[in-house]
Image (cartoon, rainbow, N blue to C red; front, side, top):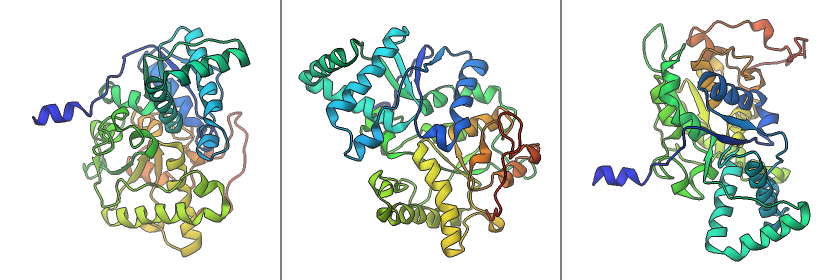
Length: 348
C-alpha cells in the first residue's frame, strides 16, 4: 500500500528530445541560469534540447494580472506548440513555472472543453496561418534536472558537503506555487510531498531542512507585487519564512520559480535596510540559488559564469564554505570582460 501511495506522486519524464521555452523574467533576474541549464543538458549530459529564438513570452504575468484575456493567452500558447511542432519535437520543457502551470492548465481545459481548443485553432490560423500539434509531454526544467540528478552526481566535482567538517550542508528548498499547487499531479511529489528539489539536494550530498513554513508562499502573487501599494504583502510573506527557517541555520536556499528565487533573495536586502535584520551567519543573508546554479556549482562551473554576481545576497560565504576557488575581481565584469561597476554598499 505504501509503495502504491507513492506511485501516484511520480511523473514520467522522457530521456531525450526537448523543445525549450525560455522564461521572460528569468533572463532579467538570473540571466546565467538558463544558459547553464542548456550547457549542462547539451554538453555535460548529451541531451537533445532545442533553444528556439522564435518563441515569445507566454504572457502569463499579464494573464494572472487580469490584463491578458484567456482566449489571447490560449492563442499565444498554441503558437508555442506550433513552433515546437515545426522544429520536430513532441516534448516541451518550460523554464518558468508560471508557463509550466499555464501549459498544463490550458491542455487540461482543452481536454475537458474541446470547443475551446477548436476556437483556439481557428484564432491561431486567422492570426498567423499556423496549425499545431499538442505536446506529448510537458515538463518543467527542474523536472529534467531532477531526472538526471544521479548522472550529475556521477560527474560531480563538488559535493554539498562542508569539506572541513564533513557535514552535509543544510539546504532550504522552496517550491513555487505554480509548479505543484495548481495541478498537483503535474509536479514530482505533488503539492503534499514535492521532491523535485529535495531529490537534487540529497543526491548531491546535502541535507534538506524541514521547518514550519516550508510550504508557505513567497508572497509574489503577481498583483501583490505589480501594484506598488500591495508590496507589503509579499515582503511580509517572505519575512515569515525567513523567521521560521533562521533557527535551523541553513547554508543556502534553492528555489525552482524565477519569482520566488528573486524575492527570497531581494527581500532579505529589503528587510536588512528596513529593520537591520539578517538571517544568515555573521551578519550575512542566506544565499539563494536557482537549481541550475546549484547544479553548476556541483559540476564545477565558475560562479561568475553561472551569473551568481546578480544576487542581492552575496554568495561568497557559501563558496568559501565549500572551499570553491573563485576570482573575486571577475565578479563585476561583463560578458565582454569589461568592468561594469559594483555596489557602493554590500552589507549582506
